[in-house]
Length: 209
Image (cartoon, rainbow, N blue to C red):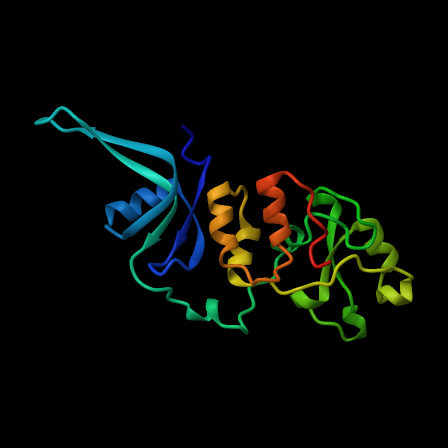
């Protein structure tokens, strides 16, 4: 099995989601005796050498979620005022790869970051002032607000929590990882619909609507 196929969700010992780690990283954590407990499905088995006395080969079963020793070293993750770093990968994922003006679904190369209130008009480069826009809509809007350009936002931009940010950074999320992360989302998280869509196959609404 390809060791890079699955990404493992790492948490602290209390279950707070921290980051995605590779199978190779997990093997190192086991070697350093840093794994406190695991949950979720087994996604990989790493085989080692054969014991000369028993003739049995060592194996590490790697689950989709694991907790490591110690509490989160960055307690700010849990603070209400925590703001994750802003980057296009997470922004496009937050907005479901949709243009927040025309509603079209686009590839990454066709998308751009738009400042709802333009920087030239005093807008800031913050989660609450940026949305995903296709290059055509962004070019048309230019240095104007949506109202000045005659455009309407399909969803209100929001600041993701750390757990939501971990979800947005994922390349691929397994069902058990999705369910685990959802338990850490705010009750009114716009991303809950996305989780429902993943688990049931039913279309979700545009994030933030």
